[in-house]
Image (cartoon, rainbow, N blue to C red; front, side, top):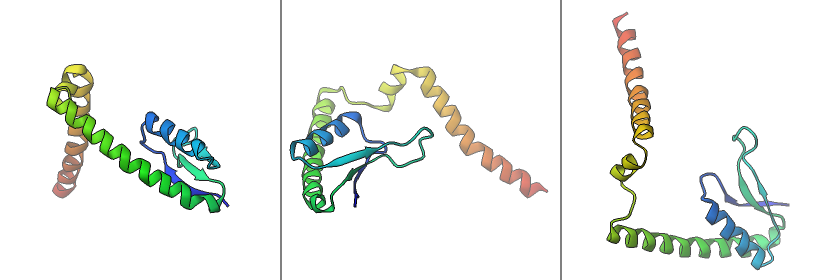
Amino acid sequence: MAKLLFRLRNVPEDEIEEVHALLNEHQIDFYETSAGNWGISMPALWVRDEIQYPQARALLDAYQADRSVRIRAEYARLKQAGRHQTVFSRFRENPFAFIAYLFVVYALVYLPFKFISELAKQ
């Protein structure tokens, strides 16, 4: 029976590709489920054979520990060089989208309070 190995929601494409390669390299029989047309299903990687699950889990845990170290080192290098992402750099990349997001956040915070204050007046 298949066993869930790795949820893929909000996982970068390069990480998914690396995990696929890792599992293929070690001949782990797996399959992938998508989020579906509506995006409400669970995208994940599943190991087909429960006997292979412990090996797959150990490989994935080691990979994620290594990736964490790699990504943190890359971020530190970018920060040292002054090229890491900041709020201001995101604003410079696309000011209209940034302002639109701020407006949406403001509306999501303001409207409930406005609605509650109107209810309190009644």
